[in-house]
Amino acid sequence: MAAPRRRSLATRLLVAYALAVLAVVGVLGFFVERSAREALVDEVQYGLAEQARAAAFSLPETPGEIVGFVEGLAPITDARVTVIDSDGSVLADSHADAETMENHSGRPEVQAASRGDTGFDRRVSVSTGFNQLYAAVQGPGDRVVRLSLPENVVNAPIREFRGRLLLMLAVAGLAGVAAVALVARRLTRPLAELSEVASSVAAGDLDVEPPRSSVAELDDLGRSLGSMSTELGHRLEEVSGERRTLEVVLDALPQGTLLVDTDDGVLYANRSLIDLLGPVPESLAQVVPFRIQEMVRRARDERTVVDIDLEHGRPARVLRVIVSPFDDGRALVVVSDITDRRRVDDVRRDFVTNASHELKTPVSSILAAAETLQVALERAPDKVPQFAAQIEVAARSLARLVSDLLDLSRLEGRTAQHVEMDLERVVVAEVERMRPLAEERKIGVVSDTVPVSVMGSPEDLALAVRNLLDNAVRYSDPGAVVTIRLDRQGDEAVVSVTDSGTGIPQRDLERIFERFYRVDVARSRATGGTGLGLSIVRHVVESHGGKVTVESQLGSGSTFTTRLPLD
Image (cartoon, rainbow, N blue to C red):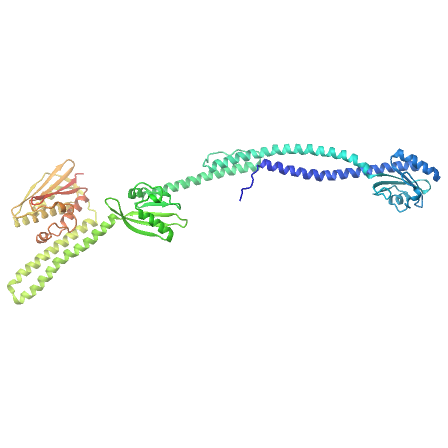
């Protein structure tokens, strides 16, 4: 549908005023002309009455004289003169044959004159067929003298009056139009200024000051517009503040957030999404992985939340993607990196599996040796010490495993209080603790230390040193030497344990600190290892802000080095 034609307020006011003037002029002209005509008719009739009185004063008595009198009076008065007898018969008429005229006793003006009044009437004449104005008075002998004129004698003065009236009304109308134009201009100018202010506010310029006006309503409108602009500014500031707050909150979230518009344009993307998927795309078609695009379309079509896990990037990261559709066609994409969570779940699952397996082995050995011991008590008493020794070995292995599990659980479940401590004293004490086992296995232990103080937990650091020494002694052959050194290098305390054992293959170096990981499973169990020692060492060192590394060559031994900050 076509838009309606737009006209200015001034034009509307001028058109309305012009129409009003035309209506007023028409109505006023009609009534003024009518009143003027009536007044003029009355004036003509009264003039006729005066002339009739003058004629009645000098009216002759004999009929012959009356006829001559009437014929002489008509040119003087420019009117039709009629003399009517008391019985209504026409005695003489200036414009008609009196003998052929009907009785006039029934004429209203004649009846009024017969009663002694001045008679007036206005009607269509029977003899002429035109509207006539009549005035009659009583003369001598109860005769009536009547004068009449056609009503159209007033038309010429009326036309002249009408012209003057129209001229005056036209001048008044033009003056009114000029006044209305001036008023309209004065009204529309502040309206135009207010319109410009409103357009500026709509465009975002909220600092404009609405103009003042002498018109109370326009001034109130300007103040209202100014108040609205101020209030709108406050609201926009609040919305902007809330939006900035929301953006800060969304940017602080670890989950990537992507808002897709109905036309597949990207409305918003937070910083985490950039970290997970790369630069912010301009549209859904540029989003990778491409499965996210399929998820958005599916969520829109099915109007349901879509949730999947997928791998992305190199090295591959596991991402959980959740797409939630809006009723208006938009879609919210939330991307979470669950790689570490899944790794932790895998580690936890592997830990439970490995722990169960490691516990099952000594328990099975104890049960088997106990059953065999029962049989040996009856049939081979000399074998009882052998089976009892097997039970003891399995029980000690189980006890070491449980002890390491408890130590690991304790380290993971609490944060130890760090105090200033003498690390050399801890190292020397653990060397002395390990000497009996080393001498039993015919392995030498050499220590090379210097005084070093660190902030840490004496109990936890002693446990780490103990596990390093125990690991070196158990994996060394008889006659070998295990060397432990404590030194200060820059702002670090360095503890290194070197053995001359079998060494570790290069493929296993990255995994030896995992729980229950063994390079040589058979030898580890034969030596009583639990597979948790190095995991405990790494946990202790990292909880102290340090780092543990290993250098090894197969067949040449290994060196484990821990670096702890002095402060």
